Length: 383
Ligand SMILES: Cc1cc2nc3c(=O)[nH]c(=O)nc-3n(C[C@H](O)[C@H](O)[C@H](O)COP(=O)(O)OP(=O)(O)OC[C@H]3O[C@@H](n4cnc5c(N)ncnc54)[C@H](O)[C@@H]3O)c2cc1C
Image 1: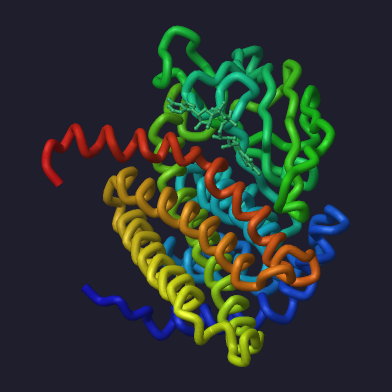
Image 2: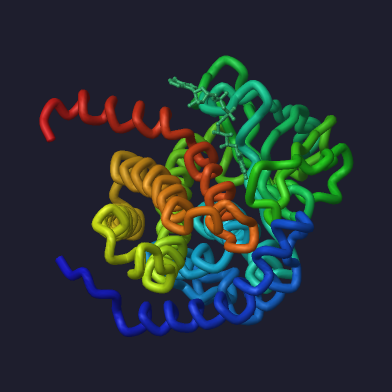
């Protein structure tokens, strides 16, 4: 067991940290206020090689691991959670998923645009009637003369307003339950495909979210990924990677609020001394620091298991549940440490708290993570 990152990972961490502090952090408040997607940042991330971090080099990517992606994600989220969420949907949920499961022809056709950022990506699983119970999805793909006609709708889709390439889960067998699900690559321009009005959200205002609609949307047969009724394992493995990398967003944001709280506590004087000298403030900082470190270890463990191809739904759920709830606690405590200023927009911690709440819902709610963990613990009988 080695807790140190490799030299290459440390280099990538430094590179992303510098980019995030120079290019991403300065925009964060504006994106929140104006509800604006940072297209220019994604262009620059494409040039830097960040959009294809997880894509093999033969398709123009950087060929890095899920662990390295978590390290990069922590830095992006430290600077701006909106940017991090849209990056997650593009680079992990869509691009990495396609790199893992697409055919040679699909990868040659779609990955270069996703890696450069010429095309942005999204993944569409959730439906109005199938959220936590995702496997009950009803979007149906019917075969018709050498193509499929997809009908149904998806909701809460990150990047839908800006994406060109969508990975869509649809049912190809109505009787087969979870074993009747397939995955399709759907282009925004396909006939019968449309994107609804973006949602107005509590947080992550810079990461656009919208429903999509498919009305006999014609998808060529060659855009079926793997084969009919083959998507259950893709979906489940994808969720493990999503939960590990998504949890690293929470770690990055928690680190940012801890740093702000520490700086403020050292600076702010009350009763003739810095508030950092008060034991109740020290206790908060100690708890935040300890929980942050524990969360990062859970995230890195889940990421390493993903990289080694070891089934890790338990570890991914541990990481997601603990990190997302830890980060909400940390942001709330940071606001408390900043007192009245913490409640003011100018100090930005309130934005991070609003943004972070999404982490306990998206990618599977905290309740669903607890269900997965409890079922696994009960199945194993001993830990
Ligand atoms: C900002 C944002 C971005 C998102 N991006 C995407 C995306 O890019 N692609 C995508 O496909 N989806 C996306 N989602 C959807 C997200 O994954 C779902 O919102 C989530 O899985 C919960 O589904 P739901 O909203 O339908 O809630 P529901 O499933 O209706 O849950 C409502 C409540 O009931 C609880 N509940 C449900 N079942 C159980 C149970 N068995 N036991 C105990 N409690 C239960 C839930 O925990 C929750 O508290 C996004 C969501 C948000 C908020």
